Length: 175
Length: 107
Image (cartoon, rainbow over all chains, first blue to last red; front, top):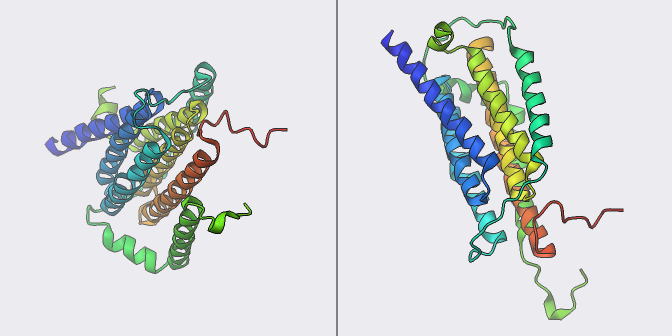
């Protein structure tokens, strides 16, 4: 009973962290604050993965999102705004209409899964998921796994090509 | 109500996923800053991942959901890298990243 209540408390804490972080991203008027709220949301979601026995995915979430995507986002924010500006604008438009649309979508989603009798898995044993995930990657999912490495190579080259500075030799650039 | 609060079920995670999705959609719909729009997309992908892993534990069993969520995380990272590189290119060319002012292709 004690363990159950601990897990329940952890769920509400982490879900609250994830949802409040997401709310900060959606409603903050300063984009730096938005990016920092995004970090809290990512960390909360990583904690939820741990509660769901997906420790490998939680590690990947922290490494890739918090360590990679977030830093990249902050770099982009810093590079596209004058740092000296006091107000780093994050304007938003059409809030009432968007709120109505989002409320409709949420109601639809909730209606879709409320009261559905999902297939219940037999209670899985709590063990490290890394072994199973690794076996799945190199067994059943080996083709998508290799394709992923190809996609990452293309992204690497594409990002370099897109964001490099155009060097014009002798001042006669054509584009 | 106390019974619903006491033990966490699949629905709890689905509600969290739906809330994250809705907030991400709100971000995408209202932001005029391109980077804000990209942040909203990241939130939506996170919501999808929460659902994948919740179903993987409570409904399907096995590791399929976890494997798919790792692929989603990989694609989200790729999308962020390319998207932000494009935003930087737009900023260098137009001097703004406001999505309402990029109207060059407007007829």
